[in-house]
Length: 213
Image 1 (tube, one colour):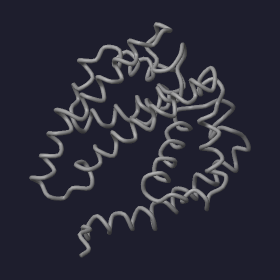
Image 2 (cartoon, one colour):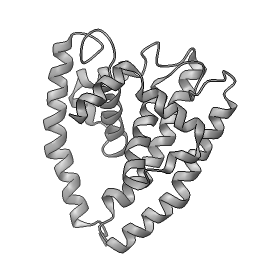
Image 3 (tube, one colour):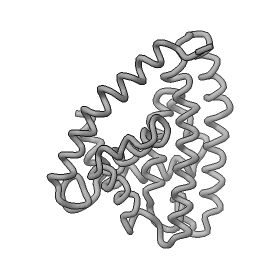
């Protein structure tokens, strides 16, 4: 018996057959035109991290292999996560970045269950309540504790400087908290400080401010 929701399958088909080809083709051309490691100019921007993480997340969770049809975009997303000044000071820090982003990806999966996938209003509220009162606070508590244990004494998740893990997690927390509970970060001062510091970075602030206009 096929228990899949017709509406869910319809949305998935639209994503895979309409939205992905449309946007990925555009990004493929932008990457080709840039002739470098960045989408714009000679340095990373918020757009680089945001797009690289989004396409990688879709490739991992929705349909593995999607990026194979867009080789330049695939190479770009892999390159962004290895920008020396964002990937950690050594292989150990780089591995920790990967671990943290995998963890936030798991959290996003739980968020998507009630925010997008569930169509029944009652079940949607039940899933949201569990997420807001248990799943999300548990994740924030773990991250806050990890920051407290960071021997560098900084607000960053890994090492002494900001990494791509800080950026990706800050953006995911922004989206989740806005939709689930805007005050959710207030009880976790280390997470809040990392979050605020990420969005205070000039390259990131400039892009985010422009998107709000």
